[in-house]
Amino acid sequence: MGVSGAGKTTIGVRLAASLGWRFIDADDHHPPENIVKMAGGAPLTDDDRWPWLDRLNALLREAEATRNSAVLACSALKEAYRQRLVEGLRSARLVYLHGDQALIAERLGRRQHRYMPAALLASQFATLEPPLNAAIVEVADTPAQTLAAVRAALFP
Image 1 (tube, rainbow, N blue to C red):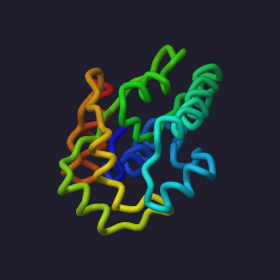
Image 2: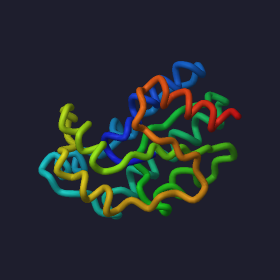
Image 3: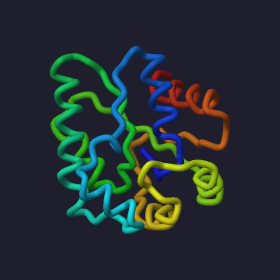
Image 4: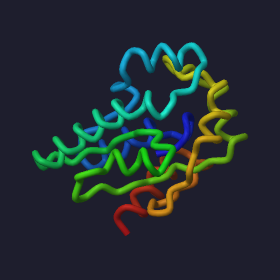
């Protein structure tokens, strides 16, 4: 979890590959109206997010029920969102990819997301409730170093 540009997809894909697990990118599961809203520069509301989070929870429950472990990359900026994501799961673990706003803004300036404009970064930081029960991994290092830190946090 973390704000846009923290490296959720980059690290999530690498983590899933290194573990032989399925990778799920939450961005692939937004309803079309959420995508239109974000692409237009408007931040999502809680009401926009609940159906999306419920869909992600269903995917995680399905993975757990079929014993197919998965890595989910999802912003999950609020505690209520995280609770909704893991509801009913027996073995979910949370990693918070943390970086300061200047670093993340610089990263976003170098990339083009398919619908998440860099202008929404401030709203993400304003919404962010840092988790109390997560492994916190700093993202200032290279992706390989960040991946190693995530693995060490999950599998000490």
